[in-house]
Image (cartoon, helix red, strand yellow):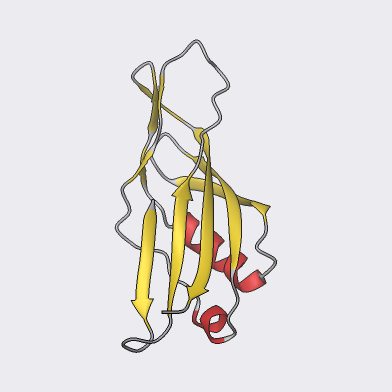
Length: 123
């Protein structure tokens, strides 16, 4: 999982965007599948407008990761209730790069589920 941590000012409040990699659905149980791995160096960003307005939430997204390691499609399967957070999540996931999943040694397209949690906490 990835965590973003930024302080607005020293010793005051901070906010985090946490990304949790969840399960990858396997449709063919006879094949040995190696899951895709994120190789992107870019970290997710907690949108400034969401921080300013103290908007928090969790977004669950389903991604189609191609055999080239790119994200072909991002679909929100559970909204945070905030268009700002949902949009930031889709924008971020479209930029992700992966080592592709492999099935019996060959690259495969797979669907990957990820959850993104945005929250503000007090020190």
